Image 1 (spheres, chains in turn brown, yellow):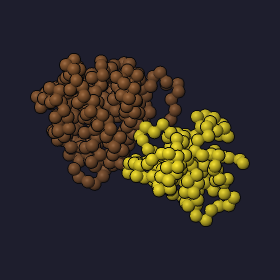
Image 2: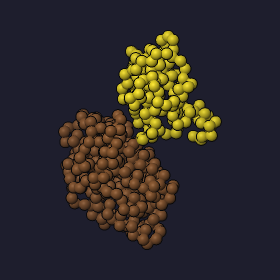
Image 3: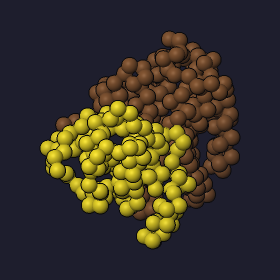
Image 4: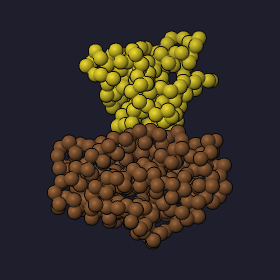
Length: 263
Length: 143
């Protein structure tokens, strides 16, 4: 990708709108990823894994905050986006829409969904968009231990009991299609970001992702190359047609603490 | 000492408390120097010296030694501080912003404090100064 940095205001309308969509889907996904980690602070298999989930929750919400703040460059009030949107407007990746049913599903989300987000962020940081170049590398550095833990925990479950392998495989197969569709998006907005030098093309991202997760998924009996991406797509939000459940959106917005919000 | 609330950009002071009421004692307030009695010849250097007195809320070494201060500018009474944090969700961000603002606000020659949050380059332990490392070692913390 081209090295010269560019501001959002310098972009034509189409890539500018596409960039806004990308920032919002990344920010919302980080926020929901944090919620999914937080679901397991006190229910993880050990104190240590719960504490790790706590640390990752903190990271994800820090990343979300930095990403939401980029929306100011599009004339959008980040506070309103964070705290006042309707549930149906959330653009987070599909796999995080509702509470994950078991620890194996969290490990799968950590490896697959958080991993896909990091692949996208890595490309974003190497593109032309100035704010991504200056802010995203810190996020990626904080994601390093998420990736290490995800790999270790996924491998451990994949090598344990048949029941654990089954749960892991089911969760993996549940999450992969929508995650592949999101990361590999090649619709008009995604193409305009590639043309503007802001992101790599979907197939390139998918190849990076496959190299990252493929060998370990194979240990769990999953051939990532044989999984078809979801076909349902909402181009306005850059995700599938659904949305997070009401409880998750309420937590993301901070509905319970609305009277206590500070700048 | 009379303190005057200064305009602060990109920060928030005290959660609605009257300015003279400090809600906590973070930032090494008990060891801060009194304000300068005369305007400094080199205000930028004076701002840096003041910042060197502001301690991290969690470990008692200065924000300067911790490597969080990425730049200082001073022009027409406005002190602009470019700072980063050890983590994107550092729980002490509000304290750090408040501590910097309060320390600099003691100085009559500073009219305005502007805090610019930066993330490039990302903070790592490599940014801790040698002096900071020595202080941390005396506290039993390796870095």
